[in-house]
Amino acid sequence: MTATTPWAPPTLVTVAPTGAESTKSAVPALPVTLDELVRTARECEALGAGVVHVHVRDDDGAPSLDPGRLRDAVAALRAATGLIVQLSTGGAVTDSEADRLAVLDAAPEMASCTMGTVNFGRDVFLNRWEFVVELHTRMQDRGIVPEYEIFDLGHLAALGRLLDRYGLPAGGHVHLDLVMGVPGGMPGTAEALLACRQAIRDLPAGTTFSATGVGRTTLPVMLAALATGGHLRVGLEDTVTYAPGQPVESNLQLVARAVAFARLAQRPPLPPTEGRRLLGIPARAAGA
Ligand code: KMH
Ligand code: ZN
Image (cartoon, rainbow, N blue to C red):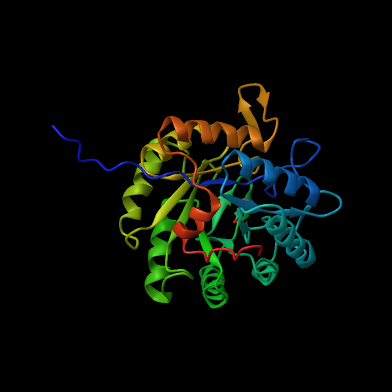
């Protein structure tokens, strides 16, 4: 008998090294300065990461959407790495819509776009429909490729509605990230991932997804994503405990584990050049 199942695709590994929630005092390995961010990004690229999802911090280590810092981060990461640089427009739950929209002025090649409001622990991560539309259409106008952040199953339906009404994103390819296990969002289970996988079939053909399991859901989500053709996001933004009683030592440790699982699944990491092709991001000119 001949096998008819196609080989699974390589894995695009995104590292989310910092986030907006942890403090340096609680998580000493967290990169909060520009130097720390760039060093982490370089190391993670060498191990197989293809994308860096970026939140920046101020001089006190607090989350920041300062336009100058964002521009500096984009420039420094472009100079030091070949990674696809994805700025967070999610910021922190306290950030204003205006500041979150202004993130796009730093002209990243990619940015996140969260598809709806979600309870976020004791907070609310607010993403009104009009705000989502504004982010999506500004990114279309500026040629910035979105990664749609999906915290709940209903966010996939909202994404379908967004694309129907306002058209495909810049580059024409739809890519989303399932952010699972946030207290208030969908659970980080294989069952929930499969429900999303099913709903993704209603989105444009060729839609790709990555998945992130927050906290203790990191491993089940990673294994379920690898088994179903998904890509991976890992990093200290989402995971600060490596194993029971064992704090994460570095982003590198999380990327190394993700890459090892991806290789075991015979889905080796996808370099950033090929990641750009997959996501519809223009190739970087030589030396640029
Ligand atoms: N920090 C969260 C409130 C994103 O980066 O786009 C939002 C977040 C999503 O992390
Ligand atoms: Zn983020």
